[in-house]
Structures are given as structure tokens and as C-alpha cells.
Image (cartoon, helix red, strand yellow):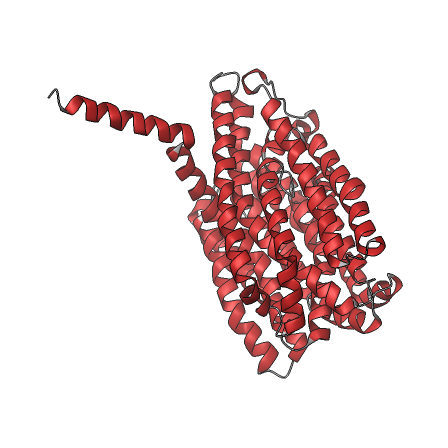
Length: 482
């Protein structure tokens, strides 16, 4: 018995040492929550349009430029707005579910769908006139023509994406996880086959790339609609169509517009930089290269964004229960610490990119010039991924991390505005045109903006007195629920 005591003490010390490095239980919970839902779901939906760009890119340099510019236009004017507008459901459905007003979840969902449908009609008019607008923005006429063609065939997908975002929020507030994973991952896998057939074997060619994305989004939407309609889980939260939903359209908009503005601030910054890349002498190459970097950075961000969602959940629990459990401050702080350590997983993606950049670039294009140029951008891209992974945990592109969970939306919005529009863009434009670094200059500016954003939000998090924070729910949100 005496000889076993030191062994037990050593084992206990090792366990305590691991806890200081990483709380394994918290890490397991966050990985399941984030990877199973947010990361897989977000990456799947984002990759549907990215796969279409890849198939279009193998048709030629002009097609790659048109697809990347068109996809940027779609993201800035469509995806960003739909993601932001549907964000109000997280507040409305979350409150309704929390106080057991289950019927209201279905009402809120319908009001959100009415809003997104109306917005989709207006955006469709804009998308039909994309070519003259892009030419007016000094984009290469041939590239603008291809981009406009790409955008037109994605219009059906715009409606599907708007409906999807609303349903995703509706399900998310009810902690539905695996059905969301399946209804996003399965259409993504099917999309690869659909895109291949549409582009290479249907006679559609370039038009088949965006059209296949639209079809895949509608397949995912149909799967989710059938699940909600026939699952017993939603017998209280979905009671069918109701005219009462029209009464909540305006209250929904009051919450949705601020969400949309916050989301669009960052999306629009990226979109503006893509347009600036189109002003360079070799516009086809620069537009394609910069968009490829943005797509790569976005996919890696989606993974760490899942951890941001886990922190938001913990911080929201802290916000609602802080009076009852003063120890929740330590819990929230521990959750943030664990998530920041897990975000180091981005290093594995960075290492993979540094060694496999040629393979990744070849998915977008067969052009040796594009592949070589992408290789030269890889170190800067790795820096952007590193900074974005850390700040994504704390603020997120739609402020779903600590900043939003703890009521710091205004600070996060001003941080993004300053980081991208005051610091990042001016530096990028100066380096691109005055110093003639071109695409590298634009990306260096973006890295500078991300670095400033990460430093500020990290400082804000570290300086917060978690156990002394008193968080309140906004009065206007209470009124909407009533």
C-alpha cells in the first residue's frame, strides 16, 4: 500500500497539470457542440457555391474570373443580408422557447420567411442588372458579363438560401443538431455530382455551375421542410401556417436590421477589396487570386466559428443565470479560455495549407500562373487564418461569440468598422497601387485589419471582470416577445 501512494500522487499531479493546460471535459463538450453543428453545417452550405466556382474555373481563366467575381457579388448583396436578417430569430425564438411560448416560434419563423421572401424579390431585380452595375464599378467588361451570367442563374438559390437561414435559426434555438448536419452534408455531397453533370455533360457549361448550386440549396431546403412538418418534435412549435405571422413582420425587422448591418460590415469590406482587385492591370488574374484567398480563409474560419458558437452559448447561460450562480463567471471565463486553446487547431490547417497549397489551388484552376501566384500568397493567407481564427471565437462575423453573448455588440461593430474600413482597406489600397504590391498589398491590408481587430477584442475579454458583470436584456426585445 505504501508503494502505491506515490504513484497515485503522481497521477493526480499529472491530471491537475492537464487541467491547467486544457479542461478536457469542457473541450469535449465544445468540440461536439461546435463541430457537429456549426462547423459541418456552415462549411457545407458555404462550400456548395465554392464547389460551383471550382467547376467553372476549370473551363478557363475568364470563366474563373467571372465565377469568383459573381460569387463575391452574391455573397455581398445576398448571403450577407439573408444571414443578418434571419439573425433576429435567434433572439425571438430563443426567448419564446425559454418561456415556453412554443407556438410563437412557428409564428416568428413565418414572419422571418415573409421578410426574406420580400427581400429576395428586390435583390433579384438587382441581380438581373448586375452587368451594367459591375461595368459602372470599372470591372473588366468581359469579366462583368460572365459574372452577371453566373449571378442570374443563382437567383433561384437566393430564395432557397433565405428560407434556409430562417429554418436553421428556428431549429437551432431548439437544440436540434444531427438533422441539421445531415440536411447540409448530404446536399453538399450530392452537389459535387450535380455540378459535374451540369457543367460537363448537360450542355449548360458555365451556366451549369450556378444552376447546380441553386438546385442543391433547394434540395437541402426541401429536406428540412419535410423534417419540420413530419417530426413529432415540433408538434408544439410548428402548428401550421397562420395569418398572425404578418403582425410580427415589423417587430422582426426592428431586430433584424441591426443584425444585418453588423453582418454586412465585414462582408462588404471583403467585397469591396474584390472590386478593387478588379481595377488592377491584370484584372482577370488579380480578381481570381484574391477571391480564391478569401474562399480559403472563409472555409477555415467556418471551423473555428463553431467554437465561437459554443462560447456564445456559455456566455448566454452566464447572462441569464448570473444572479443565481455567482460561480458562473468562472465557468464563462473557463469556456473562453478553452475555446481560445482549441482555436490553435487552426495551426493544423495552416500547416496543411503551407505544404499543400498547389493541390488546393489546382481545385480552382489548371492555370500554372494562378497556382504559382497563389503559392506566393500562402504565407500572408496563413497569417490571416491565424488572426481570424482567434478573433472569430471572440466576436465572430455576426458577433455570435463573447461579444454578442455578453452584450458587447456595439463595441464589436465599432471594432469591425475601424479594423476594416479605417485601417485595413486604406493600407491595402496604398500598398497595392502606390507600392505596386497588387494582390499581396490588398491582402497585407486585410491582415493588418484582422490583427487590430483580434488585439482589441482579446484585450476586452481579458480585462473583463466576469464575476462582477451584470448583464441585462434589452427592453425592446422584451416588448417584441410580449
